[in-house]
Image (tube, rainbow, N blue to C red):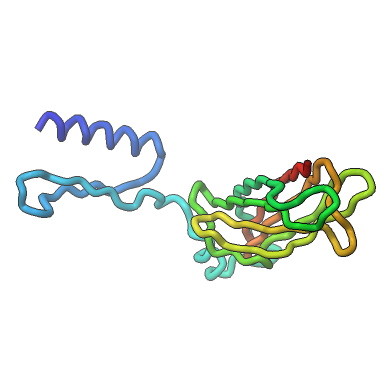
Length: 174
């Protein structure tokens, strides 16, 4: 009984720290004499983005919801003088929860800085890896090759005109 009390107190303290409303249910689910706890409703404060859109949350008078966007570039197959792909890996969350239903049309990539004499990058392919993770394969624009140096890309996300976010990704080609 002492162990259950300690676990219960720690669980309640943890939930209070998270600031989330939750419901604790205790039952002996398999009649073995051990009471199991189950937590439900951990993110009751977070509003689902699909619910926001379906409620008509679009247009000039609508509130904007901030997406948290993280991105990281990697050289992958890109080498100076060729036009093979590099990658940009993206993680999108809303109030700490993964946003995993975006499509390529919800993203905009804009090349900001390139090595001297080189050009912008364009998307070769896009994939939704699930759990809020996305991957872009990028290549130099037509008739241009990679140059040695850093490529900085602005990545913007907009979902149904109400949820937006942006970040910068860098690809170092060596």
